[in-house]
Length: 107
Image 1 (cartoon, one colour):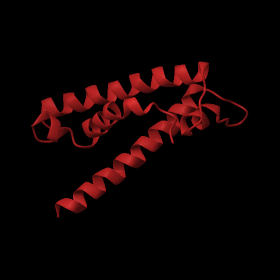
Image 2 (cartoon, helix red, strand yellow):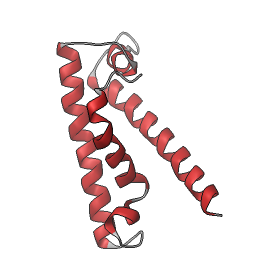
Image 3 (cartoon, one colour):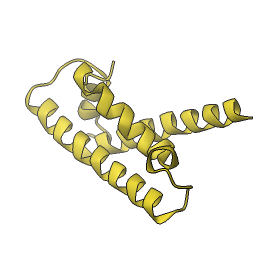
Image 4 (cartoon, one colour):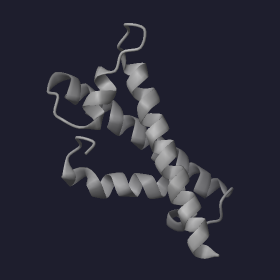
């Protein structure tokens, strides 16, 4: 759907968990310096992954949502910042639903 390699799924899921529930992976509570550091490192790895992936897709586009993000124009302008904005919103949307669903299951 996104146009990302299926082989990247384990890494993407680990990135998702590192943002949404870093305390589970770091083994420390939210707000602990180790947990915060793990979450920050995960965020950096997400930006690194998508920076590389978007550069590859610009050279060799394939079908999927990422292609749509990269081809989006606003006011006749098409640039990487627009794609980042879309990706960030999508990640935040997914993270929000993961967190709220996770919180509901814990009640």
